[in-house]
Image (cartoon, rainbow, N blue to C red; front, top):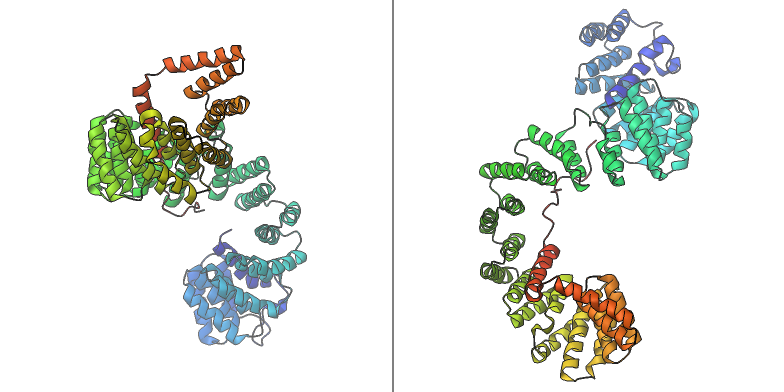
Length: 622
């Protein structure tokens, strides 16, 4: 029920209702000392009932010329002015009622209702409280105080008023509904359900819809999403323009992740606002329902053709449903009207997906030119060159990137990957170590460091040990830092015959698997350490765990086979070594290592380009 409708209910309740004998006791309306209402009052009242407020106002004004202190006429004047939308003038009339009858509730109640209609809840509460002082048991005043306090989110204050009103009118729908609503806000779910069970949904579809929506919220609080969905669906069936139930029904359905159920969602309300369309579009997009997202973002653009966020997200939604060419065409037109580096960079990524590599490079370059201080754009351009092994331009892009963004680990990681692909392994190692120093928990930098393997000689590796030791000591809780230090110590210690380094290596590798049990490479290196010490059973357990975590580990299967053979388990050894041979045949060693490193780098370090823009307020306006 709208605030205006409720306000009109109260205004009539305090005036027309008294004459019909259905309102509060007769003493509620305290008139000037006379035995009956004036003829002007009766005529004006009849005209108001006939929805002729203009004619009623003219009759009232004539009556006030004769009786300027007639409080009943001032009260009717406030009603007529309110119906005409002349609210400031209505306020003056109700204040006149208060001035003329300060001990009666009617002026305070009607002025409070007017303030409620105007959205001035604080003042409404104050004047309803004045009305209650004069009529302490009037349930209408109590309900109205409670509902206005609720509008101010002062639920604890509202509860006692509504509890008292509910005690006076235990079967009244509106009183029970408002009381239940407050109880739910106070997390009193059991009490809320008890009040709702005692209510009968009214015949009015809009009011019944609100009853079912509130029942759905109770079900949600209890964790019963199936019951919540049934109630939200019923609420929406009763009132197809009630946005709230549709939104919650949609949110719960999407959270369930069942694509078939998503396809069965009812049509949305026909009069959604721009913000509601946009927020629903984001909701669908974030759950992978791109087709539905397209519908809402297109609706936003019909209402606001230049809405930037809607255009950006519509492009992502087009891509999500496979309409790549439509996404490209839309973006190109938008960029012509509203060029921005963000849109250009997005267009570049979609051109790349469509196989238009030259166009992709051109747009990635343009994005960097438009905003050279954006790290993401620089990275995307470098990654684009790397993807197609255009290594010299990639090297230059990442070299510039490390200068412009010296705190970006992935710029150094990209630089190292290019050096690696060019077989400039010492340069790659320096770049990877810098990336680790910037971000000691970077899985990409750790994996890249480990991938260097035998590419450097033991003497070259030894140069990096002081820096790795400092990294491990500075970040004792970072598994990647401990792993890189421990693995390098093991590699160099075994190669140079420095057995005294193995204990420290074991300490680093053990810390790595403790901090990150899923780090397959750390288990592999621990196995190698135990194997070097002839602790075959311990080595076996580590190799088995490494393969469990990474079933396609070539080195893991080889070392497992060797360990089984050392333990005399020849059948298992043959099985593991056969798997090793199979994995080895499936790749071209050197080229695949480079390409796999590049691919993994781009996948792990790129920010998801399909993430929707969510700059507006997160909640969906209802």
